[in-house]
Image (cartoon, rainbow, N blue to C red; front, side, top):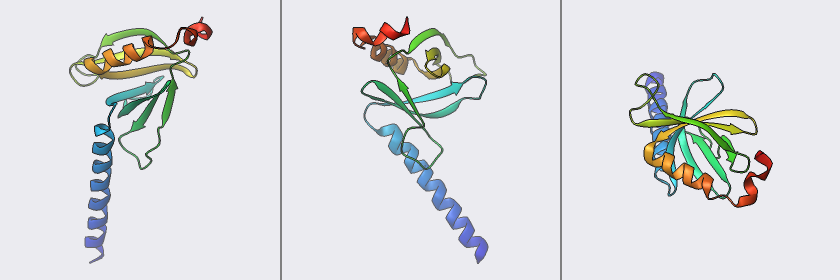
Length: 132
């Protein structure tokens, strides 16, 4: 009987995590995005534009608050390229950004990349003064 209770609990947690991921991905203005800092592996999550910041929330986790809040001010794109077959999903692009905390890599679909670049370019002119 105890094994059945544990199995039901594990299934309930799995269903809640899946529901959380779907709810995050379906929010308006959210895009599926992977993040990598330094030599760490890719982490899947949802990115959402909130004012002058890009909030990234991981798919796996219990918190609904963003794990990374990437400020648009001072953020510059160093390079971008299409991901190779072994690196990630087909059709995804990776963007290397120079941020306050060091290099940051984002991987997203081509449509999401277009939106990301438009969001960066729509910054007020004074936003890039400190990036020089």
